[in-house]
Image (tube, rainbow, N blue to C red):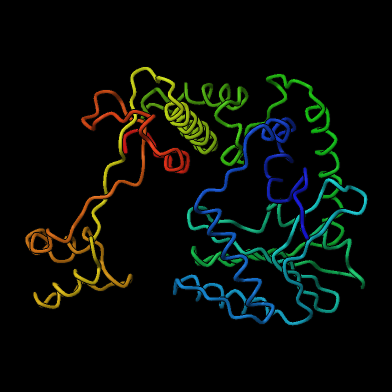
Length: 366
């Protein structure tokens, strides 16, 4: 049975780049949000199908994606290993589980299924996949001359591959060893200096991002250039700002999340209040909506089994939607932090369900 390793491939984009990040991230609870929980379920379905099972996947899109992934892996030929738990023989704190490894003569394929639909993931320069490649090579029982890394991301119509040689993976392993050595003093309690931080792409997923003085300093420095009118900025400056934009976004999002969590815990955030997110219209009963649509002679089916009220309004117009008014309700998906000037009623954090508050985050102004 697999276990969590201190240096895991899934977090390599952080600890490979920024030495203090691993130590600082450990003090935050590992809370899985809805997307992570769904991803875990889909990965389990993928493994079951590859092993010859027939899992009960209710969602048609998910079922199609899982079956297509299994077909993709099988089409590579050779010997297929599923959910492969690996530990580096010399570095016991370095280990993880690859979704699938396929051995075809002197070629090794490493496949990673990504269920996300917000950020496209590519193979080239992907440290997580490269680390799986390093670990998998340690298990090879025949000489391997070529390694092919695969990302299968169906919800973004993304199938990415990248060929790499065992020698290149050996070079990457040297970088990994160096990063682990650099992280060691901070894991032992060394307090980072400002110059120790290395802000970068990994900040987007770093639990410490909202409290990171390195990211804050970097973001403020870069943002100071943005306060000039964009039309007055040199093209080179625009390019520099765009290069760092994701890091600034990550820091601001982390700050907003931290502020929301503190407000839910009862701390006053000066100038802001808790409020319900703006509601989304939904059917009180899809079956009743379909029955009424049939009576009115209108079509409310689409890519989803039944169009939502906003989709019906867009297709048929507000006058037609008005006939469905008794079947439309407005639901809020949770709480958000808004300026005191917002017209929504303030919510006392003592009245907010803790689970709903902890699992939902919305940017200011939603």
